[in-house]
Image 1 (cartoon, rainbow over the protein chains, first blue to last red):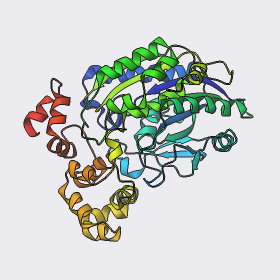
Image 2: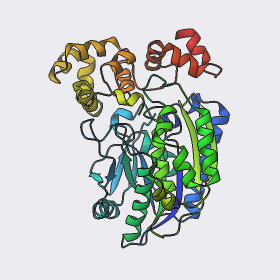
Image 3: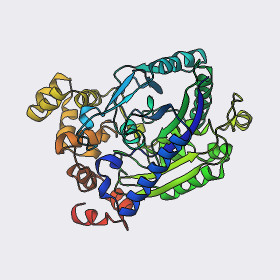
Image 4: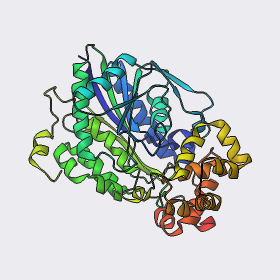
Length: 298
Length: 117
């Protein structure tokens, strides 16, 4: 039985690699401090494997075929893809070990549990994997399994489906015949609208409301208030990346610790970082499961 | 869903950008002979004209996915140093002046609206 021992989420905006220095010094320091806290948490929890959950950004799948969940199943992951080298200011590729056995198990076990997940060899990587890898796993210390999401091609999974997927992912990991210690890291968000008419827009009010709800720790309330419709209002095609955070949150219990936040107009994204200190007991359901079953509106 | 709902998931231009990003030879051809590349992917005149406009608003109006539009701008204007002053971002300032001004008013980037927007 693999065990989730750490749960975190972070913004993955390309500015955090490609034009980091363009932001005010206090924003840079906030991000650096948060990355330091996250790396320390990975060490403290004695993590073996990081599962990175983030937006595919139309990189591995074209518009006529966009699976909601795709697992990178190789034993080594190299990135970024060439097109992104200069955009992310990377002169050299990163290389991190994968975990093919566990990744392939996730794909096959998800099918047995009724969830369609695609798999990919030679997965390509942009900011959603490169940014967290550079900052959390720069030396390839942790084996990595990327799970890419469809966050941007309608229809996309909403907050409730994502939360339920998180519960399923935990079951899958618990069914794995190994003793790996897993960190789930959701990447993406907060408010931004990449490529849309409001490319420069950040909805600071939304971001602070969402982070306050995370700090309050009532999952059912978060699922009621942070809908996909609300996320789209706060930045179409970008803020919805927070479904990755919902997936991770489903495996946790109670409050999240907000490590830092800035409405970064330089990085063109609400920029935030959180750690959930407590992982939910393996009861087979998420904290908000019972209230979700009571409400058809979610 | 908001603006992303405007995408035409069957548009050949969307398909073309997907592949151009991933293939250095196609990216070279983008620079050297864009018209023949567009012909090879079967783009319509409307799609080609939208590309040549280098206008994000026009590209989204014909159904290009919003996330691919900055990639088109980067293919035209370069990929490095994508701060708000980059020519690719200036294209957005020009295409969406009101949205951009509202977003950047009172921020440290307000000057780019006044200078170029």
